[in-house]
Image (cartoon, rainbow, N blue to C red):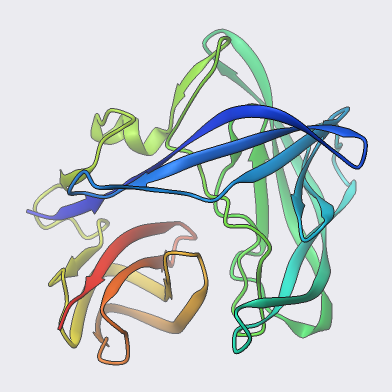
Length: 274
């Protein structure tokens, strides 16, 4: 049987604040691992201007969502240039242009919401994006990770991921993936998959010593992030089996991302423990 170990992050709208004359919302949260241990997450600040949502970083507001966009509109998002040798200092921001390819109408709890599907049309300064798309939905937010890049010099300005669940006074939504496995929103620990399923990644041993095995039909690429979301390793695969040398990793927790050849991806928390 396949076993996937899940952790979760829970975010709360904590309070309002004012920045540069704008009323903003402060969002905080905590990370809970498979053992039940919790640790605080950093603070995020957002503001709404009509149909647009912005996040605040490095004394600037950056576009996160535009819920008023139409097909063929061009939107500009940001990635950041960093210098990891100097305490991850931010050197500046690089604009990334996306065009809206499609807008769908989806119904949750009897309410209709718009989902936006955009395609990157220009990577500035030659930095390749991991995802060639950025898709998001009213109320739910990201439909995958926000603006990931494959480079040691630039990274996503913020590490926003798809929500497994969302709830407010209007709707309660559980992602398709969590419904498929019959999981509650606060689930941590093992998921028992289908025996011998080629579509479910198998990652073992976990914790790993100096070698991690990854098995799944059609692995396109793998990426390893530290717990701050910084990309520290990437490799194109194009195979069904990958023995990964992890001897270069310091002991600790990491996020492994597996890109599938069908365009989907999955995330796995891995532990390095010599």
